[in-house]
Amino acid sequence: MAHASGKVILCGEHAAVYGRPALACGIARGVFAHATPSVPSSLWIDGQRIDEGTETHSAFQALCRELDVRDRRVDVQLQMPTGVGLGASAAMAVAMARALLDSSETADAVAEARILAAADAWERLFHGNPSGIDAATAYAGGCIRFQKGSDFRGIDLRQSFELAIAVAGPPSATREMVAQVAQFRERDPVTFEQQLDAITSLVDDAEQCLLALDWPRLGALLDHNQTLLAEWKLSTPEIEDCRQLAREAGAWGAKLTGAGGGGCVIALPGELGSDPILAAWSRAGYRCFSSSIATVR
Ligand code: PMV
Image (tube, rainbow, N blue to C red; front, side):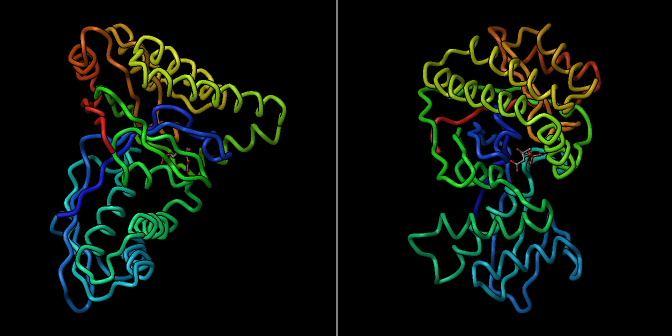
């Protein structure tokens, strides 16, 4: 069985679209895939066959073409929520690409590049022009520093840590949120550049905090990133509510993760751990869970 992780973006989303660095973490929940020879090729998700002519089937064909693998039945099992901005689509793509390469004789030393290219071919059908951060995180797991156009690298954590994750609403389309941010750039390029600089600097600081295991400061940086994202109108009342509840339950910091305009909130649990945060979110009716962020990629 091949596997790939779901993801959260710790900080730097949207700035990543402009070539700035971002930090992302693979979460414990993810996707499993298995490929077996079969004619014609078919894709099955949680036991349901995906019909030809659908967008998902076209994306599957694009992924197989990119890998140059034919005549396979691929079975996918989702062990994470979909459609909430946790990267289920990229995790599926990476798990399928791994399974297809495992099942073929063309597996080789450049598997990483091929898997990421195949995931990109899949993602383009759904997201237009993804920066690649979802696929890179699904591929690597652990915690990574990502920069569009350069290689991503794993951050060598000395200790795993936990994040609390709440679904604060249905996610907006990433494409629309990216376009919304682009309008801020058009209107005031000077301020926009300063905001990007501020995010880049907090991403650098956050990486140092991860290496030093400085959770209180990391939490403050997450809050600072949220303030900057809110200037681009990416927050919502539900996101702010989740942040407030997390703070009251002892979180060091909390922010939206991913495209914003809905979707998920991450909170860095304080000394009391994630239980009080999850309890507060559950009481308020938010779907939520915690995930350990692994030390190795
Ligand atoms: O896929 P999402 O919703 O987690 O957002 C991806 C992060 C963005 O920076 C908003 C877009 C991108 O392609 O980097």
